[in-house]
Image (cartoon, rainbow, N blue to C red):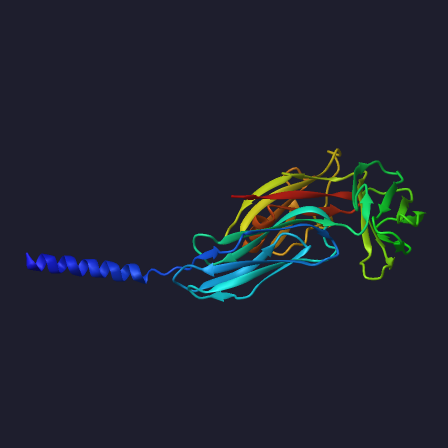
Length: 331
């Protein structure tokens, strides 16, 4: 019986030793995972800091920080966090980069086997230096060829005595922009944008910058107008869902000309989306009229998609307005 007890004790000790050998990192957010700035002036820089900790028993590697908005920057104080150590993740909302109410997620990618992506959130309401009506970005949808776009904006501010300079217009169609002061004391302006006749099918993209002459410490105002003219591409399917993956994924979409069943597309004429981690190859579809696009998505793209929840990749062709595939994360 003594030998049986000895074997039992040895087995228990071996089990304990094996259990001790299993080491794993664990990322924990030990501060509040959500920071709300409330109402503030949009030209101010706002900084949110989150405390994280390695609660595991092996080194924790921070692989990347995925932000979901160009309005922010995001950094971490350490790339390797030892067991029991803490680090900081800092999210900065840049001045004059976002307006109105917002809620933005940032994802911390690590080698924690149980939580590859950990989410922190920042929210607030950025009050603009000048209010732009109807919006700083206008999308007019699809309009017929030979149309003329006429769009007006009203610019106003609660700050008196603001002086704006002449608007600078850039884009892929000929247009004119005129800025008129309606009330200097109330800092009230009207901006009119008129295009020449839009005879050719395709996209309209116009961007405007209006310098702030006084006071001098403010960035230029940015406005945009976009539309689709005449014939356009159609993409099937228009929505795709992708999971987060550590290996490349492949999907195929088909391009055709909307409302023109007899018209043929040339694979060489297709303008492909440019996005990190995405490669595309074109070929004629089975009908000989459309174009199949074989798409390969690297792991980096699926992680960006998970962070952003939704991404759109646009395809174009000469003489046609563009079309986009909407990608959504698949959990």
